[in-house]
Length: 406
Image (tube, rainbow, N blue to C red; front, side, top):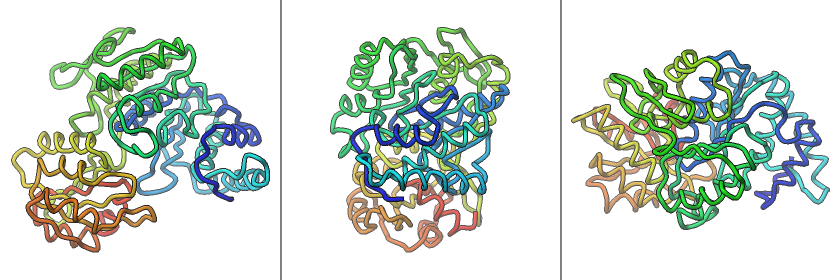
């Protein structure tokens, strides 16, 4: 399949899916999730709540962490290898036939997204949590007409594509809002909220906003979420981290706004059982605690530091960092330095990796000690801390697991 790069239209994706027989993503009820940070967690909570309630469900994640097949889920499992191969062969055949048309050949991301649509149709999925890849308005997932749209958070990331202000970034992400369809909005900076609210008003889309229509508060040793549909107590997010009660509340509200909440007790169980690779993922190995987290921008670094302080109070922390091009190392590292004095830099095994030397140069004025290493295991030995945090890119986490044999 010939990759032509990101096209500033959705017509090629629409044509590809029309030829495949899954126009507009097919028939599932979609909960379409955008945001700078937290969209993977929200998608996972939605997926698990739906499955726990007995829906035939699926999910789409971007990016994957350990295995490409993680991107497309059926039930609570990654797509099977034979199904992946069979459906992707069909997509390649159809995509190759488009190369000489005005649309051109589909990109890799468009093909993977179409794979999800085909797989969910074949599996008879009733409802799907669909995570946006990048932005929203022009993302390949944005051909669906969802039961509910979600804007989890807005922060500075991918500014070379999405814009250099929070308002501009928010407008791009708010492009997933559809006419008359409800949208759940997380706790956003005021500038971002103003942009989202304008788009929602233009589309006559009912808005459930965290802090106004959706409230999350302590309920003993658990949490309570109140939405326009009522109050639910005793809720516990299954993913660790200081930001997870917020993300859990966004997901709960999205399932209610989408009209997919038919068994609250089962949905609550689904929340508590939710797990997601690369989100404050904790392992014990060789007498140390390893935290694998895909944070890669300042806002996610802030959340990571808050979570470390909450989960490991008073313990010495060191960071192993590798990053991809398109992310600014300086502001990201400055946030991490609030929690540690040592930073080890490693390369990411990905063609888009940012030069480790550039990351190290950005880290030196910020951390007390900075060194570069070939792999995560060597970096962890140099850090010598009780808690080693591997972060900077989701793609680095797979390297970490291999290096440490976790």
